[in-house]
Image 1 (tube, one colour):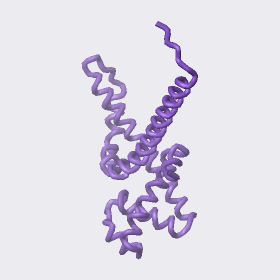
Image 2 (cartoon, one colour):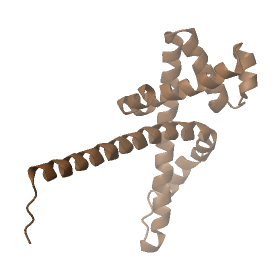
Image 3 (cartoon, helix red, strand yellow):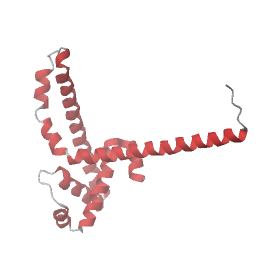
Length: 170
């Protein structure tokens, strides 16, 4: 069956398809952006749990590495790969936190304050509340909240590179 469409109908169909694709692309980009920021927040929120999880991983990897698993034990192999990925992520995250700290010290007082707020809120062994941070940093609690959010955005750049630039700028 052959359908003859006028040029006008083809233009309407083409415009509709292009509009739909544009909307879907924008939605996809926003989801990618949200994913990176959410990942940074989740990594920070669970930093101590992940760090603790990694304390015994190297010993476990050494024990399980020479063993070859049969099909029934494939789950153990998968778990060990997951543990190794976690260990590598924590090593990478620690390196990026150190790099962010160095950057913050060079970038001025406000940047240094943002790093300190982020560090004491998420990373320090003795986590501080917004109120405690406001007192420590001699700023208002709202400033602490803004500083932590901005510091997460900045750390995202260290963690995800150029891919996170859209997150920070839009």
